[in-house]
Amino acid sequence: MDDKQIIELYFKRDEKALSETQNKYGKYCLKIAGNILEDIEDSKECVNDTWVTVWNKIPPIIPASLKAFLGKIVRDISLSKYRENHAGKRYSAMTVMLDELEDCIPSGINVEDQAEKRELIGLVNDYLESIKTEDRVLFVRRYYFGESVKALSEEFGCSENRMTQKLLKIRKKLKTFVEKGGYEL
Image 1 (spheres, one colour):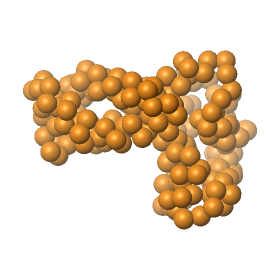
Image 2 (cartoon, one colour; image 1 turned 30 degrees about the vertical axis):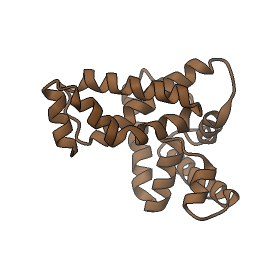
Image 3 (cartoon, one colour; image 1 turned 90 degrees about the horizontal axis):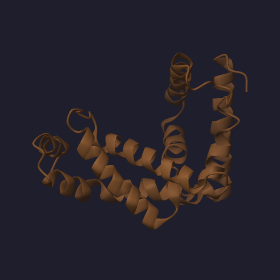
């Protein structure tokens, strides 16, 4: 069943929408949650919470891309679960991944200031558009979807050390790009 048909089922409030979504995107959502949480039970719980959230959001929302819509929801739920599980702790690959970005993104931004937040998001998006497709894919898979360096190195056919160096180079370029955009790091 294609995404448009699944979305139509949501609009009809047909519960078959949930089973179709699970069949088509269950593994995808579980992978995202697993990358963040590294715990299968918590990951399954987040995926189930994703189905509830999607049921409540469609309608009125009509996602342009159901896959991206689901990915963002499961990621947000998984990050919340991660924070809940690790409040006050320094732990896991997710913490390491976020620490890697610490030098590239200014931390002194008042998130309440939406204009500045949008400006920074635009700057990061501009950076991503300016780099090679492979580097952009690596950046998104590592820092948005939380994939491990090991998994990326295996898929791209290189050593973990080489992948680590490649990601470091991408982050250094991001840092320079952000600094040129007027942010002090």
